[in-house]
Structure formats: C-alpha cells, structure tokens
Image 1: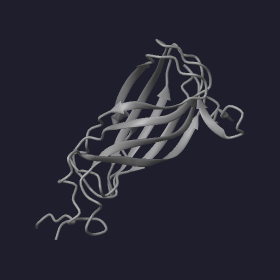
Image 2: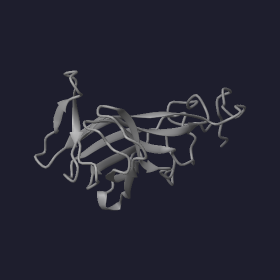
Image 3: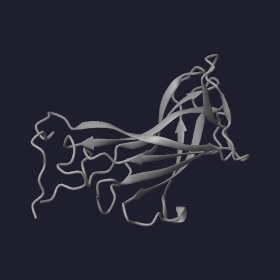
Image 4: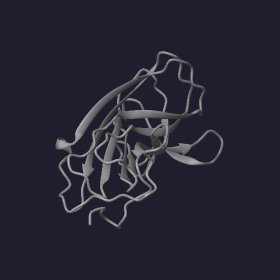
Length: 192
C-alpha cells in the first residue's frame, strides 16, 4: 500500500505553515457545579470565569483536522481569555491541565492515565483589566502514538493558586498545529 497525498502540499513553503485546531468548550464549572458567569466589562456579553484557587475548571474537545502534519507534536494548547482586574508585573496564574488523544473505536481512558501539566504563568508587564490574552497551558503536546483521521484531544484545565486573585473569563480554548496538506485524499484515509 502506498501513502498518497494531494498535489497541494506545503513542502515548498519557505517556512512551515501552522493553523488553529478549533475546540468546542464543554464545561466551565465551579464547586457548585455551575458556570461562574459574569459580563465582560460593561458589554452585557456573558462568559464563564475561573476564580483563583477555587478548583474552577474548563473542558474542551478539539478534533484533529485532516491537514495536520501527522507524527509531529502540536505547537500548544492554550486559553483565549480576558482578566477582570489589573494584573501587575510579577503576578502569577497557575493551571493544571489534563489532556489525552482519543482515537476512533478506542475506549476513552480514565483521567488518571491522561497527560498532566502543571504550569505557572508569570506576567512580565502590567495587564489592564478586560485585556484579551492568549495563555498557553500545554507547550508542545506530543503527537499520538498511532495516527488516525477523526482523532480528538480531550482537555480539562483547572485554575490553581496563583498570586493574581482576579477572575479569568474564558473566550475559547484551542490548539495550534503544523499543516502539511489541504486535507485527506479520501474521507478517512490516504492509503490505496
């Protein structure tokens, strides 16, 4: 069997092409098992907010697109967010992120076997209230050991105890990955 790719490959680019792998937010829960919801500034646009040292969490599922370069780690998994109060230089936000790849026809693994990343983000400058930020919670997550089309990444990110005590409004979560094609030749495979 020969692996075949479309003629529109990205090999002739002077630099690798990267793109978003968009996610679907699942939940953002507090101890009360409800979203901690409030509006962004005075916009009347509601978001779920994660509180400091609260065990508030957000979940997302991200489908791996057919254009993703297989066998290569992702660039990052990150949160698109807004802060509700000033963050001053030197303050920190702490996250624990659990993540795993999910392949078709394979049982969803117990969270105890998922990858776990503890991350402390230290801000190097002041961030005014209601500023949109992109915060990486997992740097270069490994590629799955077996690649298939239709794979998902399941992610659960918990806010821990940092020195910034404000609340973080979650706009979205996604991952970035390198592209090497426009898509698969067939719906679910590239092998003839």
